[in-house]
Image 1 (cartoon, rainbow over the protein chains, first blue to last red):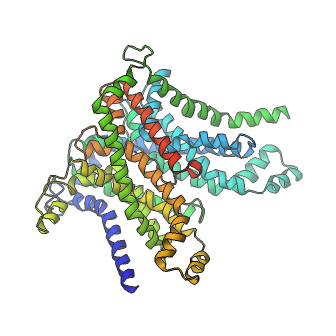
Image 2 (image 1 turned 90 degrees about the vertical axis):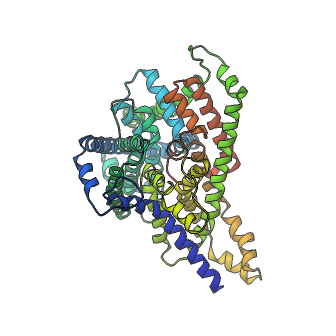
Image 3 (image 1 turned 135 degrees about the horizontal axis):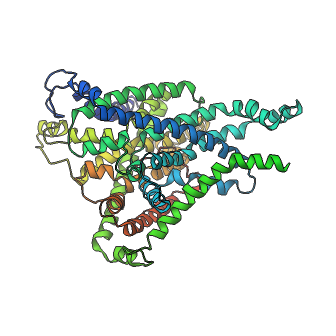
Length: 261
Length: 275
């Protein structure tokens, strides 16, 4: 029994080691003065200097952040209203949920390709707006799924009490309902933010020529081979995601529904 | 009353518009597009081209086979992993540590493997040290399977872990009290109770494994070996949207089959979207 246990520990250690190996491999070589991901030359910050002097890269980072914040904000508003609508719907609730989840289970290539056809069909110019609309679109269902459990567990008596005390519809909504489901809304916002920041495939399809986000830029540079500036970038992004995870775990609902992405 | 109904409608209108414009319309359009020929006329030519082409059929079978391999590998690693994590004292912490890599953009992780799998990279150094010689790893189908399995692993662990943690300890105790061995308890009690988690995991891994095109492009040597790559190729390179949509419809059908086989009831994947 004891032997089995230590075997298990060994397995755990090995898997965790392999999980983090690629990430630390990237970070390690970001400090190499060479230009390849093998044979560490000597310690240097030259790739960070290149990164922070790369105005194209910085403007792409800003694009990515603007898209993510706008998409998260707008999808949180629409998704929250959707969760409330699904909760109110009595007979059609199941069908609404199935429709809601279609974009959650669809492969990204299908979402990307079908949105590309859609935008072309409508004559929408590919670029900032098509990317923003797409991001809002695929973030909405996750917001709904994060907010819905909160709406469901909110006792009706809360809003009823507000009405009895003379609150208007808007007052009951903004001062009772919204605070009661706020943890779900926050979780939804953060999930939407990470979905948007993380997306590559959908953006790749609908981005056109002039506009680029970080993931698309990394892809096109990685296709040209090793570039240690990408390694420096991944160190920065690793630190940013650590901060995001920290914020998310501080603000998210404890326990259920808090399944980190 | 009518006034507040109007207000409510106004408030939920964007959500219903989204359902109509970004859920239903694109699906209808990709289906419609699959029946459009290069000249823009309605035709079943794309489906005929697809069904008559040995290349496409072989690619589809390959894609399904690789997705199966990737799913099987992740399942074989993820199940014991989830089980062991669930036994740990600070299991929430270890699970979080398991999930953390999914927050790193998958392109960066894929990019890391360009270095790791290269001729003079650490994996080849390891095989050389073990006396197995060096191999061309990068740009092979095996590289695609390894990297995809690496990226998908957490999405298999998470649902299985949730299922294992959800088992009431009293059930396991009852089984042991009634004289079942640990092995019997596992196969007769624990495994059946975690079947839902396994199915959710299979769903969360198999479908992206069919469609991940960036990994095949970066690691698999720029060849069309998955349905996802074929769709990307037709939409963005050869500009044959009709045929691309046809393969898209094939992918959606494959996805529906997987979902039916793994019981669509708890279909909401806990993972994320990628691939």
